[in-house]
Image (cartoon, rainbow, N blue to C red):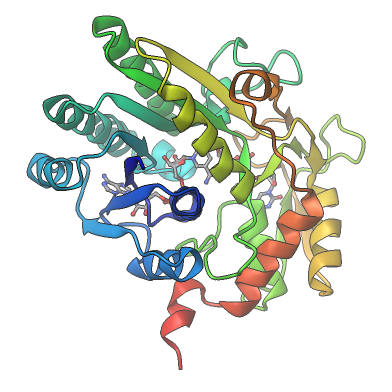
Length: 343
Ligand code: NAD
Ligand code: UD1
């Protein structure tokens, strides 16, 4: 039975991936600073899977904490989710983003090297593509991130690839996520953003639960069938399962780095998402139309065929399931993980 260290495992995608890993029989240890998450997520992961992962509350930039975790956990591989992920924050404070995301990955990989752990799965993003020339977007499409957050992802991809070029004992999977949404169907874990949600789905869920009066709908004049932007929304459990497939592929890929789009290959407009969420929640979801949001692309969806042919993975869950599962989580936890401590 293999052992994995999951950085950022208390966060949204990391916690769902921990469930999938535990259910597949892995030993799972999480290292998370809890800067953008709660230890309650790890408790909930344990409730779902019947086994609670070990949790080290530590920063990936802390060499001592990493060396200790590597020595005690002795992982076979690392899944690296930890990082800062807000596009507008990265635009306002780029140095913080470059420093945090690049340094945490470099310090982590040095600790892995010291411990002889040379398999890594990295959370990249479809944001590395920027405005695409062609749709759907394949992994060979040009990369031109439109914000510092996206640039940090691309730089980390390059850093990982350079490490593998220098030492063929390393192997890596760079996973470019499209738009992860939804929650584990138990409703015990889900997305719990701090403050005003920056993304569509969590915003809509907060409208549905009564935390916000209406959705601001950004952009109704895109050159799309209904005038709103098109995205590739992917159920977070499909994404979690994609990590398992990528992890397994590392066993036979020493000296290689592979990049995979993790998306469904299907596009949904903002209006379609509002309608699907209205159906799932049986709540009216008022919205107000605004100008386009700066930096948004018109259309972005994946060609996920490489992951299907090389990893044997494809997303299976529908938009209706994404909305249903998101709503199970949000309605059971109107205030996110804070709701768990309320009697
Ligand atoms: P999240 O903020 O919920 O999870 C990240 C976790 O990492 C949090 O628990 C946070 O406390 C922790 N963390 C941050 N910096 C750390 C550090 N230096 N050391 C230790 N822990 C640290 O975010 P998420 O949505 O689960 O995203 C996970 C990863 O996937 C991120 O790297 C993100 O950039 C990437 N990603 C996310 C999306 C998305 O839509 N959510 C899309 C593409 C890529
Ligand atoms: C955003 C990030 C991207 C990240 C992705 C993953 C930006 C510019 N990009 O992408 O880096 O990888 O999330 O989750 O932030 N919308 C509204 N009202 C809202 C929120 C969003 O109308 O309150 C619209 C947006 O204008 C967009 C669509 O909904 O057209 C999807 O937005 P969002 O969920 O933020 O995802 P992305 O913009 O694709």
